Image (tube, rainbow, N blue to C red; front, side, top):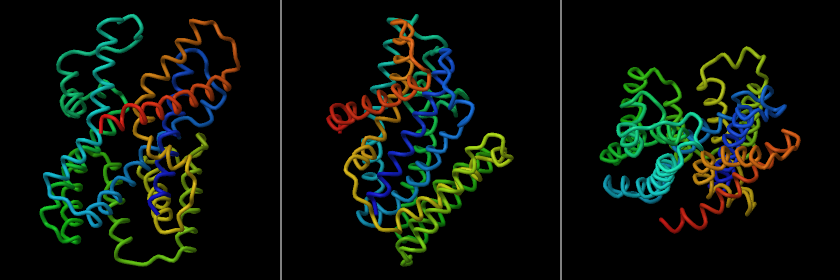
Length: 313
């Protein structure tokens, strides 16, 4: 079961990276033919991550109960070290070589809020690692989940999370935050009910088809909130994946383990790749360049996971 989630993590991370590869290529006048076709579709990897996160928190707490302190400690050790390392690296590079950045700027307030996962709250901007905006919402979810552990009983934990999430939704008006709670509900159902493998497989297929409908940028469906066009299909996909028979693929399992590093290091690898292409005056088909950039980012992310992230843990 969890191996299936690892494959989803791999897909989600690579999907987001390819979206940013297409955006990066376009900004360097190396626009791929896939850019107008896929549009923002690759961003759905974030929604998949959010649903998975909600499920995994419930799954982990039931199988390996933690105190509130130990829960927060485990989450901080998982998220913070390489996030701070990459943030610090970007600040140092900007300080020493400001000319290599085209639009980047920072100050003390933005730097501190980035380290504290509060950029959107304090500055109303993305953090220094722009994809880190998702981790700020992730940290908020962890804060809520950690407090919910106090109630111990599963039903009370779920109700408390729901109550606080509704409050945050009413304040922020961000419907996608409820994707974490959808994952929590999937976890609750997973432990309370036995779902037939065939039914789970059908639900998984429906989720994949539903997610694919938003690829067509001319479709009216893309005008709906991301919770509708990506969050709900992601929920069906995660629900199907955790209730169907696990697959066995060592490569994709490893990519799932490395997904956090892959997700973060793209902020360095994508601009570095296209800057190098321009500097070396390499003349290749833009579609080919986008694939090479994607593969380079994934490979570097795997390298970073094996030799940096795992060591820091």
